[in-house]
Image (cartoon, rainbow, N blue to C red):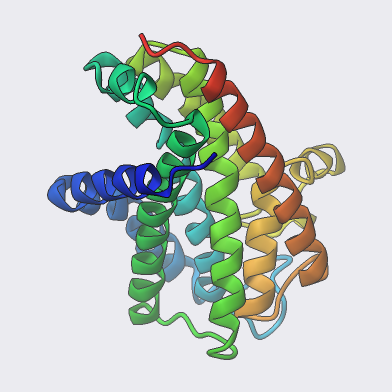
Length: 254
């Protein structure tokens, strides 16, 4: 049985940790803002092969940078599990009279909230750089894609955090995996510009569908129908959350 009190307490703990860590908030925004400023403004006046006519590069780039922000932040949520294990907090909550499902949900809720907050900030700053949205209502659908991306890669991070005990090793392995996922997703360039072998790998990347869906609803440029992107992302998020929760339940607290 799920203890919603435990879920809320773990969510609140993550919120307090995030708000108090000002350097964490600033640091998480610097990389996407640098990408937007230097790539977006630098290539904005150039004709990018594969980008639809009438779409400037900053508009094409913003959904990709949103996806990058969510990917990096969500995947690194697993680091908090290793941090809690290192300092004994994980052992304390594991022996508490609540189910591990409640613990997993609390962590997912906290990680999702902080990740989405970062994504919304990046979207807000992108408007100042010239990003234009087709319709204000499209933000709601884009937000759904952002939630699904966060769910998918929080589950992904939990899988690795549940199997590892070394924080430094976790960071190295996660970065080794998420950078190829980022570059394969078409965040920076149209997938049609890639060789067919690499393009085939791109369609095995969950982030590809999240970014394509956000581009479709925000600027009207997408490779697949938005409904298809949404269904595939929903499937990926369910699978990754299930696997993340399962591996976490099987993990040791020490």
